[in-house]
Amino acid sequence: MARSSDQQDFSVDLSREEQWLLHHVLLDRVESALQAPAETDPPPVVVYRVFDELETGRHRFTESELAYLRTASGRYVEATGTPDRDRSVAFDLLERVHRTAAAVAAIEPAS
Image (cartoon, rainbow, N blue to C red):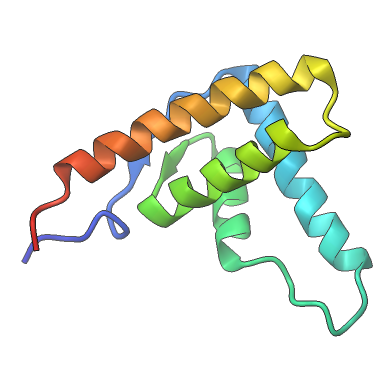
């Protein structure tokens, strides 16, 4: 039986700047949750899985992790507080993740 793309992982070539930016975005998400009221939901597990991939230097992500990367980098690009120097890096990251996700979708077997 073929594995679904969410069980497989896909390589994303990240520049050092993109790794740093993604690390910052994920860490900010976790720290915000730690400072939130107790009744606030913690970050989804995918945040920790992506963080772990960055820390190990593998940069291989499942389809759901790619979706989270797309969402997180897109929010960072659009955030009013994002420094201009980070915005172009975040946009490049968003584009790269989008291309990878599109390639993943193209290899998905028909149901």
